[in-house]
Image 1: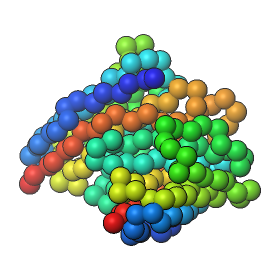
Image 2: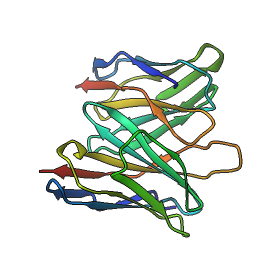
Image 3: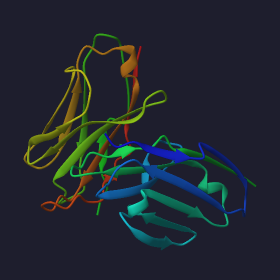
Length: 108
Length: 115
């Protein structure tokens, strides 16, 4: 089956710093999503991005499907950005395969 | 539009008992999927339902089962609970449109503790 790897596993930043999270996947996919898991466990949708580039405020994402990776950029980090970021992919079904996540801690 | 809702939010059971979790998808969404999240195994797919039919099933024992009703609401059941079933159970819904696989939206989860 498809394997999804995320890096780095942990990231510690000071408020105001920028960061890049990476997601590699082992095979062709139909779709890719980025999520932020809040401290209460809910997965918040950030991007639905099977290919191309999207931006939403301080966050942007790029997926290069032919090279099997996606990047999530966080600019001017805030403490509220803390949490775990997951990418997830699917191929020909609604079954999402998740990466192991990147735990981000932003300190004031 | 209201988001995906899950009930109950928290549950404490003892080994050997059974439990039923409920999920109401976003209005108009017809596909519902369930996931288990544990510290050791991460987020794993349990099963997916569409039009009251199970379309996909993950690699979980038969103690885990589910169903979907005509209004797209879904329930999952775990029988003969084991300590290892302690987890966050997440439900997701999507607006399935033919062969397109759509963005999935998650509920707040049910945190199950088995003592």
